[in-house]
Image 1 (cartoon, rainbow, N blue to C red):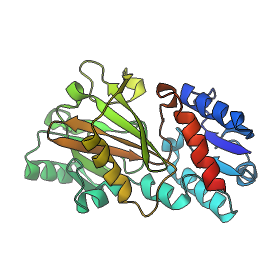
Image 2 (image 1 turned 180 degrees about the vertical axis):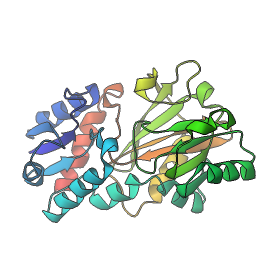
Image 3 (image 1 turned 135 degrees about the vertical axis):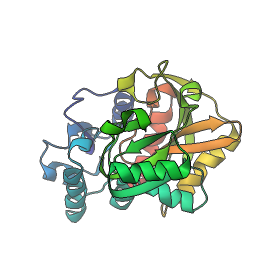
Image 4 (image 1 turned 90 degrees about the vertical axis):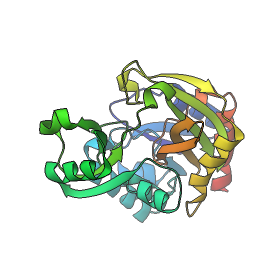
Length: 278
């Protein structure tokens, strides 16, 4: 049994998940999807493999999600991607590690126990009139805020990432590149709603398959090459500029893979799963 962990907020399978489950069954695999919060841990532990591809509600209890990963690992469960990659990707401080390795990401600062004065000092030092504050652990844009001097009374406090605002994101959209077992599969551009800066479905984003150059693919692959092991699946999200690609997020836990946009990609994913299972 191959089990895909989902969330209670989205009980029905997405087109991407439907494509993956259908491809698994076409190869004679028993496949199903169950919500991670309400399904007994032993059910996932007993599966041939568990994929946390749709755990899109961990943002409201990140500690519980980490404990779930730890408990499955302790029981010998086969998690794909493996627990060490999931834990590394769980905290967005990985962006700082990528930047230290010389890879292109927006300028980002990790603020621990920040208050408004600390944020203001950092923004003034950088000459920023606007910035983005992100929870260290979150997904799908939950808790992300654009801050400027006009909304200082609503600035968040506590641990966060403070990031340089990308003024051209509305015009460029965000390009997502799906990699399966380290190999590029397909790219989809998230087209932002007019006046919007967040590239998430709840903010009116639409999607289109796009072709990206080999240079962009190679740059995207360089973020995966930084990792200690090749992930089964990954999505590299960023801005495609004439000056080069800039990473916004590297998604190794629960990325929407857009398999329905690329016929045959679900079969490639299944082949990679079967190879990992031996």
